[in-house]
Length: 283
Image 1 (cartoon, rainbow, N blue to C red):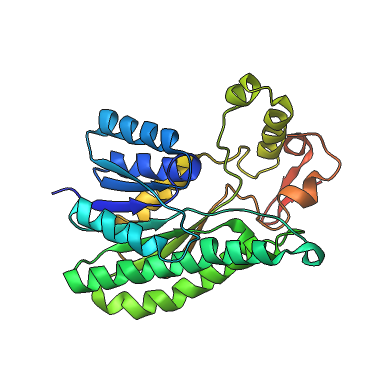
Image 2 (cartoon, rainbow, N blue to C red; image 1 turned 135 degrees about the vertical axis):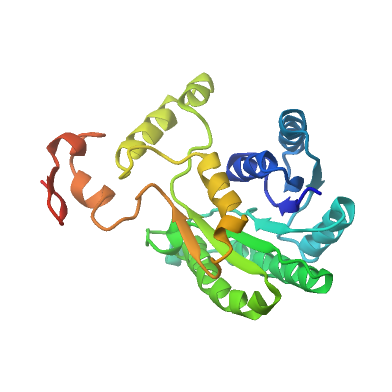
């Protein structure tokens, strides 16, 4: 019997990557989208044709009161159960402290924090009542650890989720339920070719440059996050709970991107940085 999962915000990008990787593992899926119905339908069709698993789609404005519970109840009923919840839907808005709008604060709290917790509550209660030793995985961000200007709201809320699951994991551990987070770094949603075809050469160049400044030499891909989610939901990770797994290619490792690449051309640090035993790199 196939396992069943809900993945929010899966019409494109990281959510799509997660859905594809879970389908490859044999999961029946319920995916949600906010406004991109056609893209969600394409994801569902691709999953059905490639992996021959079920993929149901639902529209949900998860920042609205009651939307998360409504989505959860419909999806569980239609799937016939639940083994895995993946909270991925979210929004990034950057505003400095001096410019923060109250509507921005309300939107990000409701969508990026409150909805995650309420969906976790619904999943935990369902799994407890049904005796399901399931998994809950939240997509947070490396910004929950690394500070950037104008990122106090988004990054702060992601940091809050990283801390919150430590307690939530303790709350449900006695029922065999595991809760973990995956914290992506810089994830490239569109390929260089797609960006150039869309006339956005500057953005294509930006992603190439950024990739060269990451420790592993490239930007992340949606499937990098999908593989991490699939691993944490598997029996191979049965002894892991209350953990935030950073999947960023070394983006925020101390001293890696910003410090040693100051003033260098993309990728140049690889030719001028000299390894020093037990000390990483020196210039």
